[in-house]
Image 1 (cartoon, rainbow over the protein chains, first blue to last red):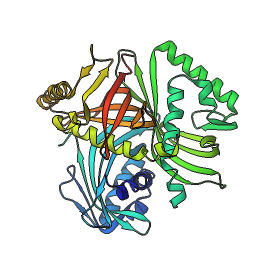
Image 2 (image 1 turned 135 degrees about the horizontal axis):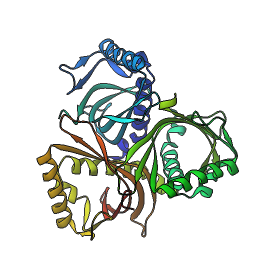
Image 3 (image 1 turned 45 degrees about the horizontal axis):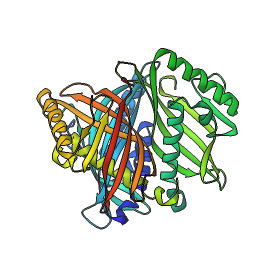
Image 4 (image 1 turned 180 degrees about the vertical axis):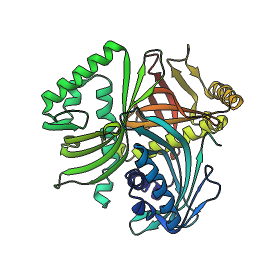
Length: 141
Length: 141
Length: 141
């Protein structure tokens, strides 16, 4: 990767760590704010892409409430991050793998899903926002 | 994160890689040296925090001997690292996720535990030491 | 780690992300190109080390075909990366942990293997190549 992009690698890693922690902690409004206003979340597990922060927050809220109801803790692990220049000067194309770990109260953790993720990230001040995310679950691929 | 802290991100990742390898390799005396002399290891799986290197080493030794006796290999994976300025100029506040993978001899690996970890790291020469660690197991949270 | 080596940490992480994605995507010719011409892949799961790109590609191709036939998706996760100066100025000694996650079509992911990995990486233009890799599966160790 080119040097300027290499400098951003740890920044992207920290962005993902913070973003996923918001989701896993049920902070769904703050999670939605890590997407652009018109951000798109596409997944092969969904019939249609989810479009915009409002819909992204609503989807995350429904999932968080279901987890709270059933007493299951989910953690999203992103790893194997590969950062490349994006389609314009202020964006990055990032490939990653993502695992979802589920732990029931008083139970053993299991691998809920193994996925790959392709992000289009855009600059937002000194941070980043997701403009487009595509998640591909391995079991459905 | 601010730029000076961003520079430390990879340093923290390598610190964790080296620290966990010591534990997983049964090098419990060297593991204890990665905490400050009065370092604290608190966990929701323990009734009381473990205080000081001597006690941290003793706890790790007991666990290592039990694993050796039963022929189980454990690996601690830290990931989703988020680094922030600490409570003073020479410290860092670090959030992470940690998985414990257990593999019996001639058997399949399993997820032994899914946890989150909050560290207070302090400068020690050109490296780091853990002054305070709090580990929260998801199944007990 | 010394400062010049620290600068390479994120470069090594990205190299592994890209290298493993090639393998997991079945791009076995490109995967073999991430080793030196005379690269060695040694593993405690193999009776003998695999020597040279041609043999490395052949081994990966056989494994990829078997996975395609059975409809299983494998992902190799490297983590807990520790980078040190290598045996000469243009090489790095890298320790890591590696997990293999296997997901059958329409099934749940499982931990196929937990391993540790020791690499001798050498400079190749602005990238890296594996000159020697030794993988130790925890269940056979």
